[in-house]
Amino acid sequence: MAVIDVHAHWEPRMLDVPAMLAKMDAKRIDKVALIPAMNDPLPDETPEALLKVLRFAMRSCHPLAQALNVAFMTDEGNLRLKGRVFEIYARPDNAAVARVLAEHPDRFLGWIFLNPRAAIGIDELERWRHRPGFVGVKLHPHWHGWKVEEAIPIATRCEELGLPILIHLGFARKGEWRVLADACPRLTMIFAHAGMPHFDRMWGAIRDYPHLYLDVSSPYLDEALARDAVRAVGAERTLYGTDAPYGFHDDEGHTYDYGAIRGWVERLPLAAREIDAVLGGNVERLIGEGGGKR
Image 1 (cartoon, rainbow, N blue to C red):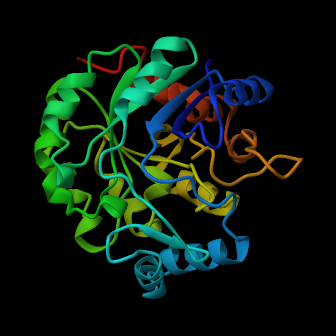
Image 2: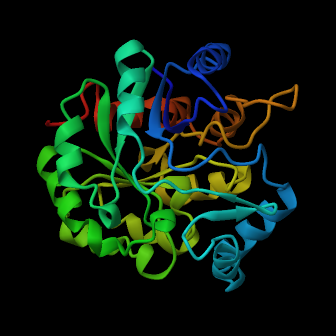
């Protein structure tokens, strides 16, 4: 069975292809699904103390979670961290990922990044969906700042094509996932970072929707939170992801460790076949080699 990282970012300014391939080989990762970069490279690592506060606030529905999100954003919709401003790209570069897929078709898959607020929608999907290696669509209402209902035309087209959507939810109307699930009942959706920022408040609910999944990527999670997510939704509805190249420094402390989240999955109190499903079997079932009915 292949091990497939369903959620990583193409950010060669932090981790280029040779470095990524070396790390994949060292940790026995067969394939990685790349998301086009949507922001300037971020600081190497978010302080663990801040991450703990964020996890607690999001799990407890504390208003601090949304307040911190507002505090980290500028009026222009960019990120403010450690006294610096990092631009969020309204138009992520899908062509950059397409080049990686063409050069390394046996090791990389790709997500087509769309943004309805910037009029990057169905035309952009149609432009790229036939390219070998692209397996679905990435949406980010949280940072791109749009209400979930704005993506219904994209979701409808993805449902028609049998293409999954990987979505990073936000707060309030940027996080109303049921809008898409109800409008497109056959649409496969993967909620990034275990449904962040909703976590427990959505885990039980998605069990009623057979085409909804979680990935367990990102330092926004910790091992205990990832374990709780898998317990809540089931191994058959959970996908391995990393959020590379963010967080999880290696033993030298200065570059990405591809083994961190894999270790979380391998230590789950599950049967071996269920762990294999999380690490890659579920992804193969959802996207196969061709990414659905294109």
